[in-house]
Amino acid sequence: MTPAGYREARAASPPLPEPRGALSGAVGDALSGGPDRLPGPADADRADPYRGDLQLALHMLYELHYQGFAEVAEGAEWDPEVIRARNALEEPFLAALRAGVPGGGLDEAMEGVLREPPPGEDPGVSAYLAREGELWQVREYAALRSVYHLKEADPHAWAIPRLHGRAKAAMVAVEFDEFGAGRAEDVHARLFADLMDGLGLDHAYGRYVDAAPAEALATVNLMSLLGLHRSLRGALAGHFAAVETASSPGSRLLAAAMRRVGAGASAERFYDEHVEADAVHEQVVRHDVVGPLAEADPRLAADAAFGVEATELLEDRLGAVLLRAWREGRSALRRPLAAADGGGPALGR
Ligand SMILES: [Fe+2]
Ligand SMILES: [Fe+2]
Image 1: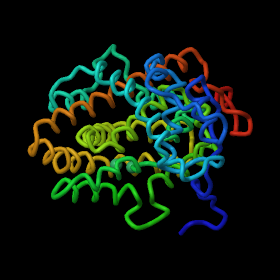
Image 2: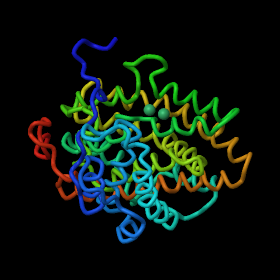
Image 3: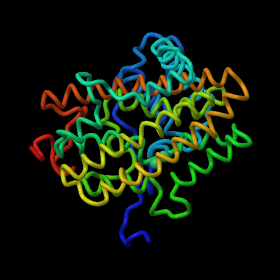
Image 4: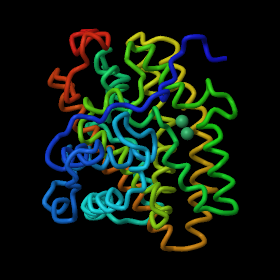
């Protein structure tokens, strides 16, 4: 039962985020009815695909397909000029990902996801938070992950009409769990909103986009990019397999981190739930979604490998930024959580 007074995270569309440069500024202007100078291929080519400006511009264009923005007409979603700008910005991002991954086979790529870092190598963000994370770092982590988790599993739903047979049945079975198996209070996005409440964060959709570093936006933009293009369905399946495979052990560590900092029962529940659920989801996605795709067409196997590797690449980039900041005792967010969010980096020290 949804408690009386619970504010649905997606009851309203968020305001447009603050621009981070010329591309995101132009997109925000055009979407809100200002000067229509949407970026084209030449603008996109000049930009660093991993920087916040391009990533935020893409984020804004993708959000038209999810929750939209308060100031933007819903019809903008399929405006041909908007789609043209999105295509222009996707190109350098996709090219950078293709150039940045090792380009190995699918089995090799999946082994990379399962690999435990050897002693002496950086253990990764989840292990760091489980071992020595402080409350302020856990709150930052939840704030930046909320850009995805408040729409958890939505980008993967776009794969469904592009699949058939065993792959489709399996994909839908996993998505059914992600969407609460018929219970609104068990939708994983809702469990994450509850986690945010437990951490004293604001669970309104889009609330922490301005705070999220470019590396965090890129991990979410990857899912939207792969989800929206039929030509990238193999990569989306690979992405899903990588996420579900990393999630069970990662969630075990993050549940421990929640207990460590005393985040409370609702925060623990989100990760406890994922330890169990994703151990199953991993098997289903790998064997019953990616498996049949790869068997049907070797090109889809290569695409799935790309999806796995691109996921790893962007998660590694994000992890490096977070750990560098936190080890130096600084906020990893573009703006530290304000007092209104329950405290900044000083909280919990
Ligand atoms: Fe989930
Ligand atoms: Fe899952």
